[in-house]
Image 1 (cartoon, helix red, strand yellow):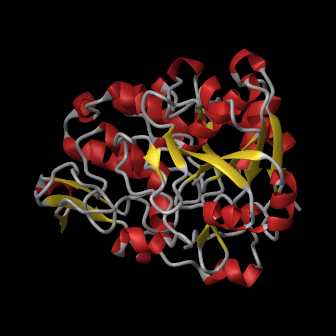
Image 2 (cartoon, helix red, strand yellow):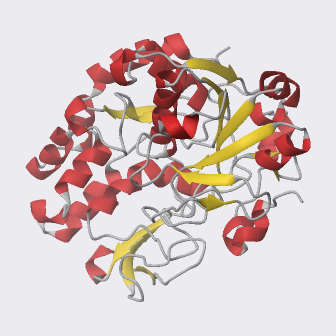
Length: 390
């Protein structure tokens, strides 16, 4: 029976409807190009790195079901943050098990085991990665991809990436400093990297960013009928708290609040579209976070009225902005104490100097000027790996 992603999350996924933009332009993601996929996977032992975004066609049939129905030997599924079904909270422990519909073993790549072991790779010939990214360096699906590439390189396995468009297709923010590497920032890319996962994988390979500068035997199945700069609306939300296009657009700029005591709307039906805290000085708009299945079970300021701003109809950001963060920083009157988790802020930002400059009172324009030189170098390097230019 085909796996219908809508069935597992109810309102949380039906809230996210596919845009007519995609159908009008005839966008065809890598996973929908079965002729190419099947020719690469036929008579191979296959591992999938997939989640609930790994869907095919208008009926949104899961790629796992599609491949099994086509006679492909799928040995196991590696699951990223939020799990195979995509309904686990951010940071929630994901356990190994079996898919209830197919009996295929599920191995978590979130927690202690972030890279497939040699034993886990021993009974497969090829790994197929098909997960929707949102273009932000700290969105951990691309960190999982990095580790899987490394495991393939170390164990002489082939890797295929079924590519998907980048819905927040901008290059902006500081380039990652090596000293701040973590699971929310593994590669030396800007906060908004402006790549599809296929392009990013080619960059990781080409720049020697895998452990020991090893190379992964990589094949990218390109998206058809999409170019950089063309809008793309996701058919399902990519993770529990990115419920629509507006949230995805705001995500990179609002995620920095996670290093403070300001809520980004987790525990509401509009996460990453509102900001606030239980203090009237932050604004007149109110919302109350609660425990919501499919979004967040234990949100910050649970059951407390928060005061702040409603950004659901705010103008789209063409890149990354510090405007909202600096506005709340100034309203708080707390100074440096506003950033209650400074190391986490630095890891998300990828550059500790940004936090220091905010505390010093520099303007957004002045702060952004500081990362332009490195950003220009990145853009020049990125150009070598782009697959979707005119």
